Image (cartoon, rainbow, N blue to C red; front, side, top):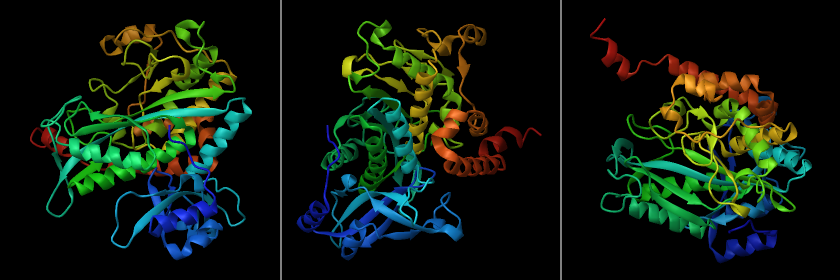
Length: 447
């Protein structure tokens, strides 16, 4: 598995010279999971390495007020990479940065800094790492003559189809090759269920490294798609009547003795820690949904009939519940949460998952009984009898659940929580004011 590198400043200088790097891209992530960057000429390399690069934080939504705008970008040298595509004026190197205050302290509104804080809580609880294996999906659309995305999909393929049905095959292959050049270990890449939909799975890593990789993954997918004349989108439900794009999160917790979720003598070979962590995930699932499915459009995906989970339950034998236990055991023992989508801020989403699980461990929360039946075939009475509740149906419902859940609120911290809640309620209020084409077709001629 590709791991982070312990690069020194001299290592960075040598790579810059060897790889003909002329520009530096300093990357960080805003409140909404969007990668932001400050680009510098290579002449500023020493300033970067000495943590002297400043930027105006008030220009980034959800960051700081105008009167406290000066912020510093401290590079995490372990994330240094040279982008493997050529540029007209030389290559571009990128590094992920921590947003710091003028006094050098971590800025609480930086989602990456917040995840580091939650990981410190995990270590205080006696664990060494939280491993995440994501499964992000995306759509490829054709572009018009002006380079703008259309609603025309690039193929009519389905699950595991190959060319000629899968006309995104060449694009997907180049995405995989580019990712591997950047240190990703790609485990699988294939056409997904819906036309024009694809999935690329890369090997698990610790939580912080995985969140960084998700952000770099999105950059690669969009860049390579454009080179093929296609537009890649991680929008959860770009078209009606077909499956949406999710981002399943496979997770496992480790301590000094190995995988804390594995117990050869336990029920289903799962440890008490695994069951308590699972109990925490299920207890806080409604509030987690606000973070893992953070857009109005996310809830067009979370509906029955399109494989996305709707009900709060777990199983080792079927894929209809919220949490699945994949068959692998030993080091591969893990829980798979299936509700999230790729619009989620990965740093905030992973922090919420970990905080929920740690609460389950701390308070020894037991999950409900396993659900072996297909939940979609149960009626409402059967679901009540089996203690199966539903996920929130709208962004507003999810935000209301978040407001009631102190554990998940703590996972974000006061600053991120306030900015996220304010922005997302405004987003939902703006959505409510819109009149859709469906409404005009449904009502205009009838009333």
